[in-house]
Image (cartoon, rainbow, N blue to C red; front, side, top):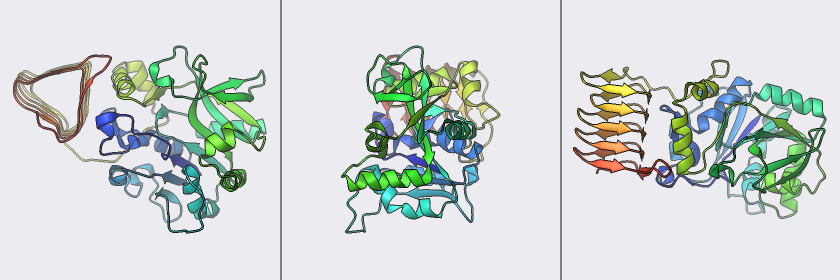
Length: 364
């Protein structure tokens, strides 16, 4: 069974998270960040998935629906979007432990023996079946997943790091920035032990499962580490979002994230193919369906239904769904959220290290 826990994730993407949770932020032309964690679970045959949300989740509800694109609209099991329930006057839990405590029925009714716990800010293609086999073979109480990165970047600063011994067991989890072993907010443990630790933490006044049950480890759990070696990106700032989005224009990066053996699923929208009018010039870009392009697009990501009129230029930018770039307008190093209209002959230029962002439904 799977848990996608959004409770601890902060809305760090500025204008992109004014009206939505971080997990609902559009990515790669037609997806949302939540799609990658859900699709990994779907590929592994996880049939019961709980999504713990607390705020700004209307966009998530609209996107996920009953979970059909991920084969989770089932009569038994499937996708459960679970905001916290404050109706129990005897409830003393807080933080993400409140979600777990108030939704114990979800865990009790599932036939799954193990819980895979994930966030949405670390994009990866972890094979959960392989992870489960590794965990069972290790004999550990819990297995955390880490990625060894060759070069540390600013978006890695908030990440936990993992210390290992020669046998691959975890000897420490911390925030020391010189460590290149990044915990990617993913762990697996046996369900009954998970529930025992939840009750223990609540009884001792704790608030967050990972921090209080695993990081502090008051019960002396044995912790194994599984090294993940595939595609990985951390989306926890505007800068990291912009950088990792445009890196998908590199064919090798794109193939790693969208590998055919583990497809990424998303909400289906039936739209016509993109129409390129006479004089249009498009190079090194990712363009979704439903667009209408008469101007110039270079090194950019265009979501569904974008219109680029004649004489307009889009350079090194991310243009989200149904934006309109009118004739003669120029955008460079810019992120436009959904339904933005840039009027004729306007120029918006940001910095490649700090792109200019326009909130959704704006007209400039």
